[in-house]
Structure formats: structure tokens, C-alpha cells
Length: 292
Image (cartoon, rainbow, N blue to C red):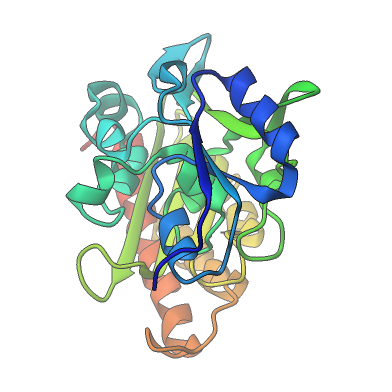
């Protein structure tokens, strides 16, 4: 299908983009990578009267670590995340995630901020950001606010707590302490597809191998990205062994809310959450011990 007609304007700064949102209100849509928005326009699931292109705002494209926090600009491309030496060495779970987003052509233009702001429960980054305890920065007419990732997604698909006049500008992730590790794994029908199910895990261990912190996020097994709280709590204070891993995986599967569709039955997806969680936790334990 062909999108309906609309006007187009390219903003050169965040204040200009916000001013345009104020001017056009609900009639406007923000265009970043466009890999989610353009199909919606083509199927006429949205019919804005104007697109506000923010791709020329160069200050929103960066990856840097400062003051114990990783800062990722909202317009950072998936390919940049995948190829960053900082990400590869310090945040391998983010590389796990970026490299399974769609295909190389998409990753060259798709943005990390857009992946989160679209709030598709099948997108890969939301679960990883939940596991990492990330925050997002939103800027609007009233200034800047920092939103914990758990408060960013709602219980409904494709919805966030962003105000209509706000733009997501940055993602913030706490720097990993010693003896920490994470991993993201997903099952897909073919390379580049949305996940049948996906699991992101992140753990911090003390010097004796006890879990002091755990984060587990689930992809595409509910109406929104899910946080497996009971599974996280079950790991705390435990030795990171097979018994703890199996228990956490069972609880992660129980936390999932899948529905049956062309990708599989709800029972199958729940079983895949259990399997993926076990594998991701084992991979995270190797990384927490200093392995690859």
C-alpha cells in the first residue's frame, strides 16, 4: 500500500524538533531510522499530516562512558553498537542484542532510541535494557526528565510513558562492576526475523560466587516487554550453580505471557523461555568469571 499524503520537515536541533511537535501536536510523527514507522504509514495504521525528521541532529549520535554510566545517543545506529570496541569489551550483552536486530541493511540505519520508543514487545532492546536497569532521557517543552526503563513501558503494546511533545534523546546504563556478566539470546524462525521468544539476563556476583544483583527481561512473550521479577529474586544470595539456574529459568517461563500464533503455541514459547533463560544465564556466568 501507499502512505497517505503528508508534509515533511527536517529538524536541525532538539529544540527545533520540540517546537515543531508543539506546533503540530497529534498530527506529527517523529522520524528516526524509520524501519518501524514507514511500514505503519504504508499500511495506513497511522496517517500523520507531517513527519519531523530528526536524523540531522548530530548531537544525538554517540556512545561514551562517563562517571560510571554508559551514555548512548538516541540516534546511534544498531551497526555502531555492534561494531563498537567499548561495547564489545565492556557491554557484550548489548552487542548480543544489536547483532540480531533484523539484518545488516536495517542495522546500518535503524536507531537504538527508535527501537525503544516504538515499544514493540517483539523488539530486542527493551528486554536487554530491562535486564541492565537502564534509564532513558526525554526532552520536551518542560525540560529534561530521566525515566527508569521499568516506568518507560506500559502494560500495552506500542505504548510508552513519553509525553506526545517529548523526544527520547539518550539511553543511560550503569557501568558494569567487577564479577558481572550478561547475555541476550533469542529464537527466530529465520535470520533477521522477530523473536519467537527472547531472554536477556544480567548478574553481578560477589567474590564468593553469590549473586548480589540479577536482571531478567523477556522478549515477545507478552503484550509488552516483561521483567521476570520472581526469577531475579530467586537468584539473589544464591551460588550461581545449575540448581539456581534451573529455578530461575522455571520462574522466568512462569512469568511469560505468550499467546499462540504462527510462530508457535503458547506452551512452546513458554518452554523456549525456559531454555533460553538457562542458556543465557550460563553464558552470563562465564562472562562474570572473566570469560568470553
